[in-house]
Image (cartoon, rainbow, N blue to C red; front, side, top):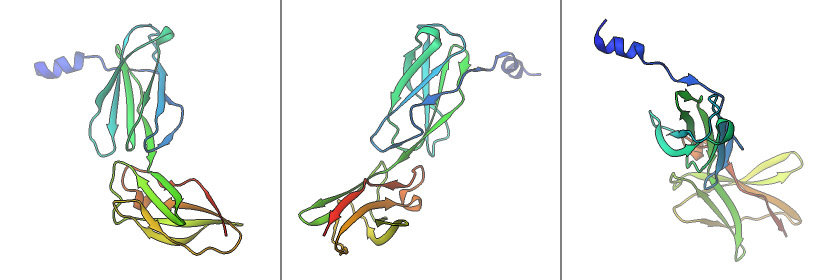
Length: 191
């Protein structure tokens, strides 16, 4: 056995500890999530290194240096911009990874009698499309496909008389790698 192999064999592996927790499993782009956990060592005032690996990256990097509180507890608010896995270490303990998913921020609004659709995330959506949907008795029905550009996309649509419940939906294939499908809040239109 070489000296290097012997040295590596003598280095203790990081002990597993309790899982990471998140106050929600996914967020909308621009939002945040609180991560928390408890290390088995149970000691206060110990360093905690929060590590993150964004979609497409091969290794984790340090994103925050924290300290444990009473009982080895800790928490931190993070704002991932794309699907991101998190881990935390303290002393010789290491949490299992926890992935936080991100939905692009999709909005539908009315401006001067026209509709305006917008999709925001760290990705570009120029040339992608969203689906304008109307809520019916049997769920959401697509009534128009809208191609996106760099600026907010303005468009008109003919609606039946009465109340229409509309939203814009961004399918997963259009959202891109590292993102969940997205949808706007429902807009009520009376004609």
